[in-house]
Length: 275
Image (cartoon, rainbow, N blue to C red; front, side, top):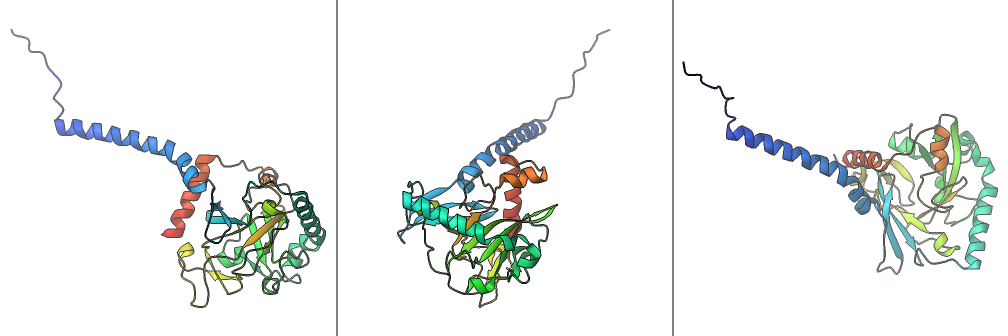
């Protein structure tokens, strides 16, 4: 008797090719997942500074999912003079001195006149930070006046609303004064998700997010220039426009997002704003 050895059936070449292509595709996807966030932050988040035609220094970066541009009459890395340091300290001290009444969120948003909030305009009551605006102060042409701040910033925590900063707003179409030189830089957003009137007061959510969709007499950007003065510790600086406050994470027990989580978060924002 002749014993015939059995062999496994041959795998068709087409199936072999499909398996190889599938594995190669998987490798590419994994590579992209590992490589994209750092590249994203280098291109999308990393600040880039240039001196533009308006003779101002512009630093391009991201701010909570929105593009933000810092503007300065002097190069951002320029060391301030003693006079500029003293002027910055005076601005901070005056702002802090005028802030106690605004610690009461209920009073500030009623009797205090800060009746417009980003949470109401955008329909996001769970927003981590509430920006509230005083329309009268937005329209009075005062600039860097601690007695008439255009906007306040509150941290919306499980313990209630906490005043964390004041935001001064320059009249639309103007560059704000920089008493502290490079320390006191202003910033603006080319486009935002809400519609503004001629004075920069937010009124309603833009129909198409950052792509616009505002009534004919309103705009979704650019915003007027703004300057923050933080009343709590901020790792980015007293006048920084970034809101990554250390107290925010420590007070709530929420860990900071790492670069991959931050990428995913901002990718969701990007998709939501465009589709």
